[in-house]
Amino acid sequence: MTGVSALPRSGLPFHAEVVRTGLSPRYLGGLVEIPGRSKQIILLEQGALTLDRLEVAEHVEGPAILWITDQDAVRVRARAGSTVGHLILGETTLANAIGHKPEAVDLRLLAGRSFRLSLAGDDGFRSDVQRAFDLILREAYGRAPGYETVTEAQIRVLLVLLWRNTARPDALRAAPATSAVILQRFRQMVETHFRDRWTVARYSAELGVSPDRLHGICARVLGTPPLRLIHGRTAQEAEVLLERSTQTLDQIAAYLGFRSTPQFSAFFRAETGHPPGAWRKAVRQDGEPRAAVQKRSYSDWP
Image (tube, rainbow, N blue to C red; front, side, top):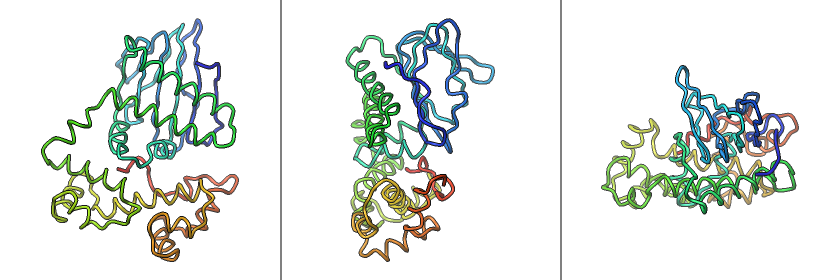
């Protein structure tokens, strides 16, 4: 791993560092503040970690990789003689990294829970993980143009590698049409077709269930009707495009499947409380925190 430490500046929804503890142990990320919910990816190349949960301590020996959610109230302490790569991801960075490919639903489900994997005995997996970490660290340190895009791409690589080694998506999709499987398939279809502006009836027909059943599943499991989930995913994509792309409002409206820019503007204002042009100006203005104008929690989707 590269010799980089103490990387991105305060306020960004992302932090990366390499920790070499030497003769003394060290807690990871103690002074890092990421707005909103966050996840940690920890690559323990050598040495050991202690996970402190209230009065319970758990020990992890390297080499290993850990994914820790903020719901898992834990402090991570690298013991003396350890080498650790440490990433903290905010909601926006994670959402952008996951994207909307067909496997995005499985990646979000994976990202919602804490887990760890040993890297001992699988040199290929370990090498792939190390390469992705190294590139993330170099990009975060160098901050060349487009570094955020490269960083998010490598985070996606890490997620897919972890997904391949922890999940069995093919078996899950072949399971009986229970409510959980229907909901997962619906989320995956939304990721693929939200820009096509499909109606709830169209999704229901593709799933082979009635609109009432789909509505009941979404309301019972998530407390949210299917149309709200569809609109939320569209609004999330609009926010990313407004902040990160150079496309005009006309181009964004067309890309997201709206018939006209006024229709898109009315939709965006209804979802966020801000006209899209004003939203773009606010998030790009120096010193204007994204959280001040963003209502949505990215980790709530799906």
